[in-house]
Length: 481
Image (cartoon, rainbow, N blue to C red):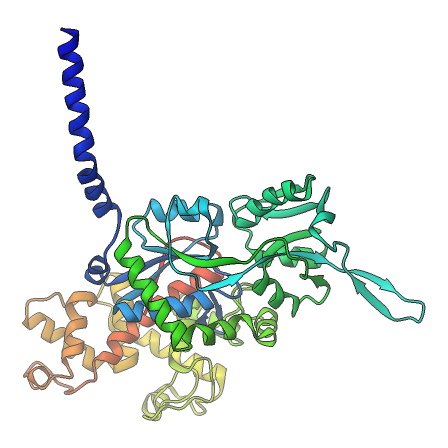
């Protein structure tokens, strides 16, 4: 009886082993992602972190080394870019494997340990780790001042205290370095939401003595903090790459081919130079009050925007997003159609609002918000606040008459005239088609509908980005057009 039981167990084990490859394939298919999956969904979903080089906002404009590359990749795929921004660098790989995101782009180094959990793309750049230390100020006999570093080589780090994130490659490197130099380093762990730039700033201010950074980041920070030294290397060169969700070989292959293309045509080098080899530009943006990593200012007109947005019950960052889209915060802007000033007010509208000088910043914002308030009242029958906002924005761009035309078309074809997405919005696009703008329901004729259609999306997308950066709420997703 025992022999029969053992035989059955043996057969059962063989059966499991024979089915294992098939089961793994099924798991990989559900756990991984294909190019077809991404295109079908219409989004490239990326987890990233904001810092002074990779992803930030400056004077209302979204910028960054990782950001520009990701936008190019999304365009190559023909999809939108959806960013999930996190401040928790310690758990960023766990976030990838436990979410429906497709990759991580957060200045991560390739390592054997990480490669067991995820798949790396080909490298986007190579770097080494360097010690960031404050230079000692020495006054010479002739009255001159000399700055010298206190750590000359990694051996001098024995007994010293260095602050790094635990789940960073800097921590791993320091642990290995202890064996190499034959002594202990006091490695102080900081929370995962401490980005490298903030730790460098703490060294500069004297709040901590040492930290570790990638050399390009360290060098460009040195251009701003003249009292730091970043000349002591503590590692061999390391590859920096993006991380693709495990079991997604097709996506990895696609990205690697694309990286090869942008390396050959010079695109990668151009973008790298823009963010990592221009110390003056870095210094200017770090010093700027309008840099998202520093403060809460989006433009020099923020106080005016706050004042007048409150009068119509808008979040000031929503109005800032609209003004950025209209004029890029340029009070002297004038469009080909004659719209003028920060909020690009048309001459007829300016006359109705009593605006005599459209180029006066405060007068322009005051008049523009009055017009937005009027439009909000015009669409009062749309009771859903979020939907009403979309109609107000579209009307500000194209005029409420054209939007009413689109609503009449939506009703004619069985759609809900009080819902924008998937109902009225498609008929705004159709107003550029003679088959539609010649219909009896259309009173205001032709409209280049792609403009208000995109206008609504871009403003709301930028609004979400502004909230993400300036409210310091590192939650949710940002869809980038």
